[in-house]
Amino acid sequence: MGLFTKFIAKLKGVSDFSTADWKELEEELLLSDLGPTLTKDFLEQARHVKSENAQDALTEILSANLSKKNRLPILGNPTTVVMVVGVNGTGKTTSVAKLAASLKKDGHSVVMAAGDTFRAAAVEQLQTWGTRLGVQVVSGKANGDPASVAFDAARIAQELAAEFLIIDTAGRLHNKNDLMAELEKVKRVVEKVFPINEVLLVIDATTGQNGLQQAKIFTEAVQVTGVILSKTDGSARGGVALAIEKELDIPIKWLGSGEAEADFSAFDQENFIQGLLA
Image (tube, rainbow, N blue to C red; front, side):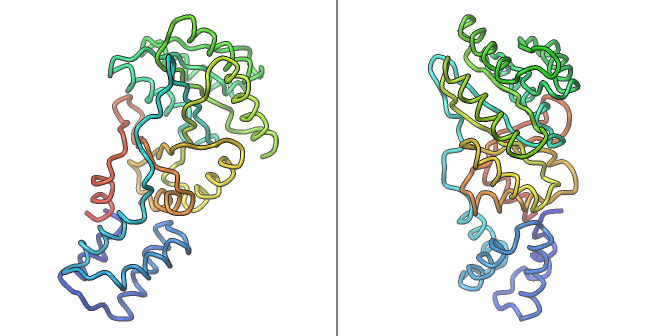
C-alpha cells in the first residue's frame, strides 16, 4: 500500500478538507517517516494547491519537494570511481554488488574493492558476488587497512583500464569519529590515483527518521552525491527518502529491493511518486 493510499481513497474527488481530514493527513505523514519539518511544509503547501482531487494535489506537492539535482551517474575519465558508504545492516555490500551487476549488464568493465575489512562476512560476500558476476574483487587481510585495499583496487583498475571502480567501505568502527576519519582517509588515498566521482549513501527504507540522521552524519565526513534506498520490498513506506531529499538536497539515485542482482534499478521519479500514491 502506498504512503497516501488511505488518504486518497477517503478524499478522492473532494476539494474542501475538514479539520479532521487535515489532522489525519498530518498523523499519516508523521507515521510515514517524513519527519516534522517536511510534514509541516507539506501541509502548508497542500492547503494552497488548487486541484480537482487529492491525488493531483499530492502528486504536485511531492514533485516539488524532491531534489532537482541530476540523478544520472557522475562519470569520470578514464575510470569512474564510486564510494559506497553507510552503516552496517543497510544492505551496503549487497548494493555494491548489485550496482556492479547493473553496470556490467550494460557492457561496462568493473572492479570492486572489498574495503569493509573489519567485517569478514562482507569481504567473503563480495568475493562470492564477484565470482558469480565475473567481476574482479580486490581484497586484503582481515581487519587490515581499508584505505590500503582501496588504493590497491585503484591501481588495478588503472592497469586494467576498467570503466568503473566500486569501493565498499567500513560501516562500523569504535565510534562515529573513527568511522568518519576512516572514510576521509579512503577518499584521500584513492584520489592519489583517481578522483572520487560518486559517493553513494545506502539507506535502509525501513530505518525511519534514523535514516535522516545517518545521512547528516555521513555528509559531514564525505560529500554524498546520491542515495541508494535499499529494502524497498518490505513494508516500509520510504518516507525517509523524501525527508533526505527535502532537507539535505541529496537525490535518490538507485532503489534496491530483494537479494537478486536484478532487484536493483535506477530511481524513476514518476514511478516512485505513483508508488507512494497507489
